[in-house]
Image (tube, rainbow, N blue to C red; front, side, top):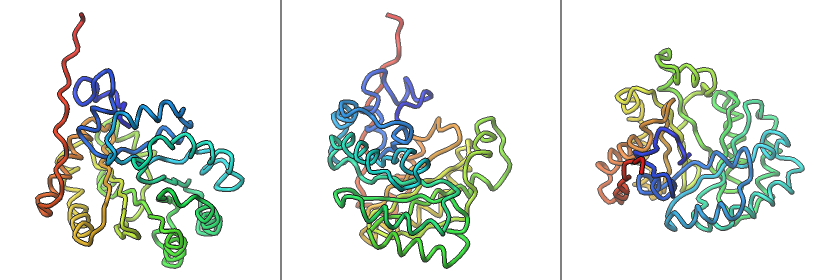
Length: 271
C-alpha cells in the first residue's frame, strides 16, 4: 500500500518509499501478500525502514483463504509465516480476508483453522457474507468462534461511500467492487482494526467518519489499542486523511501520541 503511484514525489521518495510512508502513518495494510509471498530479504528491508512500533496488518495469501478456503493449507501457511518472520513485533496482526461466498455454514472450518495457528501472532478476520451482519445467530456464531482464539473481526465500513451514486471514474470502479454491508463497530479484543472507505470528495469523507472518531475515542479510553485505515476510491489523499483522522481523535484524547513529522521529499530533477 506504500507504493501508491499518486504519492510519488509528495509522500514518497524514489528510494526507501516505506521509510517515507512510515513518517506519515504508523500502520499499513499489507495487501500485496494476498497475491504472492514476499522473499525474506524483501521483508527484512521492510523491517529496516520502519521502527519497532510500526504496525503491519498483513493479508494471508489467497491460496489459503480463497483457493483452499482454510483447508489443507499447511504448506502455504508455513511459507508465509517464515517469510514475514523478519518483521518481528511489527507484524501487528495477520489479516484473514474471506470471500463473500464464505457463509455461516463455513464457520466451523474457520474455527479449526484459527485453532491450529501459532499463538505467536495476532489474527483478525474480515467476512463479507451479508448473513454475518443481518442474522443474529450467524453474528453470534462468528463472534464466539473468534473469541475462542482471541481473534478480532475487521469491519470494512463502506456505508458513507454507498450513500450516493458515484461521481468520478475511481468511484464508479469502486462501486462495482467494494462490499455493501451494514455498519459494524463492536470490538472483540484489545486490538480492534477498522477499514473505512470514504469518497473522493474530502469533505464527505470526513463527514462519514465522524461516528468512528467517537468509537475510537471510546476504545482508547477503555484501554484498547485500535488501528484505523482510511481509504478513498482513488486513495490520492489517504495519508493526509489518515493524519486528519488521527488529529480528530487526539483532540478528544490529548494523551494520544502525535504522529511523526513527515520526512520532506526532495523534488525530482532531470540531473
